[in-house]
Structures are given as C-alpha cells and as structure tokens.
Image (tube, rainbow, N blue to C red):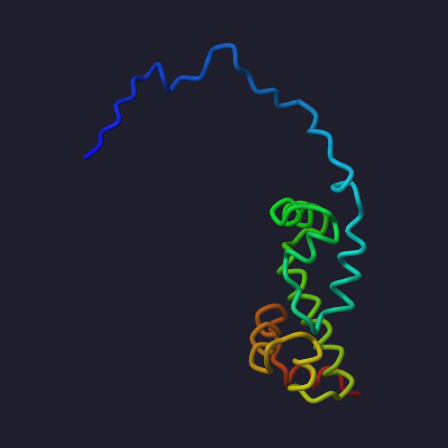
Length: 137
C-alpha cells in the first residue's frame, strides 16, 4: 500500500498570494460576446429533432462546457431545462388546438406520449387531460 506523507508547510499557501475579491472578471472572447439568438432560434425551429449539446455549442463557436455555462448565465436555466420547457409549451399549444396527444408529443419532440405526460406533469403540475380541457372554450 502506498502512503503519502505531507507536512503542514507543503499544504499552506504562500504568504504573498492574495485573492482580490474586487477584481474585474476576465475579458470575454468574441465567441462569448456573441448573442445566443441563433441558438434559441435553432431550438425553436428544431424542437421535434434531437438537439445535442455539441450542435448548439457549435452555433456559438464555444466548447460544450463553456456553452453550457454561458447559456445558464444568460438564460437562467441549463440548455436541457430550456429545451424541455420549450417542448412542453409547444405540446400545450398543440393540445390546445385539438391535436391528439400522441401526435402532439411527436411534433413537440418527445420520444412518446408517456414522455410528454411525465414532463408536462413535472414542469406544470398538470396532466395531458388537464392541458386539453383547460384550452377548450
């Protein structure tokens, strides 16, 4: 068994190292300053399709990890949560127009009707039946 021995002096930070709380944030690259509008438009136009993080990040010219961070900072939710919420809203619109639930699920980008039902219940607290009934005159 390998044992590692550390003395207290090797763990202590150098005395001249200080963190500046008031330091300005590092300058952002041109890609980070770029708007997320193309990504949001792409999501809205392709809700029924698979929306891998790699594709969305490529639209901004960012790495996957940086894109997820920037997206969360600017939009307020993760990319996955945003896509889920948009799909639920789209499904609600379709259900309100009288589209059958199975078709609404497919057109909104869910795997199947059961998947739509779970996400709808999770995000809105309403069932598919409630969503359909609430939109009827």
